[in-house]
Amino acid sequence: MANITHGTWIKDCKAIDAAYQDGVKVYGRNLALRTATPFTMIGENKDNQGQIGYEFSRVIPRGTVVAISYDITSSTGVGVSSMMFSGLDSGSTWQNIYYSINLSSGTKHVFVTLTTDSDHLHMTLRLDNATGTVTISNFIISESSTEVAWSPAPEDILN
Image (cartoon, rainbow, N blue to C red; front, side):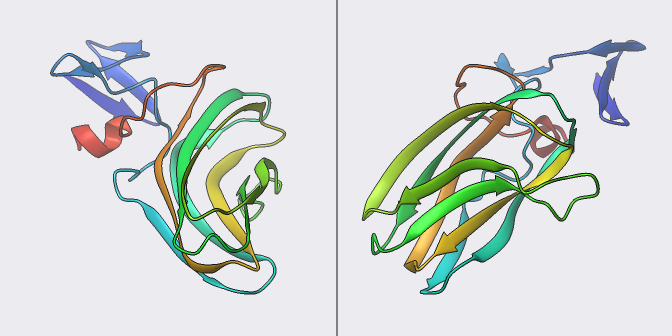
């Protein structure tokens, strides 16, 4: 049995970098919590409308290479969205994950790899002049340089 101690998975008194449930790797992948539930904002047709979306299971430290992917859906296709790390976290900056996606009616898939410029614990969705419902789904952030398929955070499965 594995359990979590201060952000590190421990099994048989040893730190491990992966945990499996029913043959599916559930640790070492998604660092964002509660991503099985899509994150939704209502566009109010104004600039710089932002809201914290997902919290991470631990601080992602400065200098970490991360792969981030998600689907973004707009009900109207009006406005621009940006995804960024939250500058409200202690030691964090407003680092852009993906800047200025023109919303289109329907769903777009986004994937980006970047190196964090400070310590991060949340992601924020920003809308500019957007109307209608904007939904983020299948959000995953992993310590990787390649895209991985969505899976929930291990804390969401094992707790």
